[in-house]
Image (cartoon, rainbow, N blue to C red):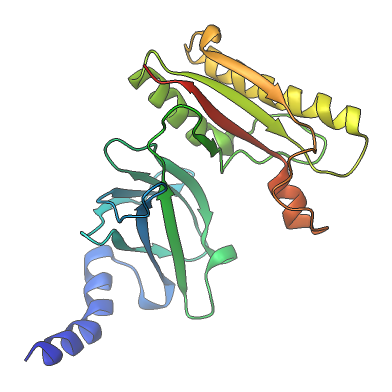
Length: 234
């Protein structure tokens, strides 16, 4: 009986999705994943929220199950912001360009690790990506930075260090200056949102701490980043 029910649900699910969301079947992209604790690797109950960009014309939220697993359905040819929250953990934020990451089977896998944010915990601002040689913050990064502002407001004694990184290519001295300019830009954004500047330290690493030394455009893009280190919690 259970096997018959499972087969029935598998057949019925695309029809249910179309009926409940108004999506035509040939536009549906399935996003499935699992939320776990970064430290213990145990599954987490979390809320996965999504919003279609740029105007929020489509929004939704779902809770992961006891195994940390979740499934959401998005449109192709679209961009979404994805936010994952679990009590006691730092939120995860990402902007997703559906067509760039979906497979030929119209599926996307997102496995997400959340950190609890203790002293010396370091996390990357995933959606803060800089153009080569630039330190300007674009509107695409505002959502993730506003999420950091919210966490700092929720924890008024928290102090952080913004750590700037560049590609390994180019002049080392110029890269060091560029990485400092980038963390200064982020700090200015946070301060303009009301965060006390005394709570925010900065440190520049230039190209000395790359994520990877592979010589590919994607690696260079990932190396241009800002990370946040927690210096004080309470």
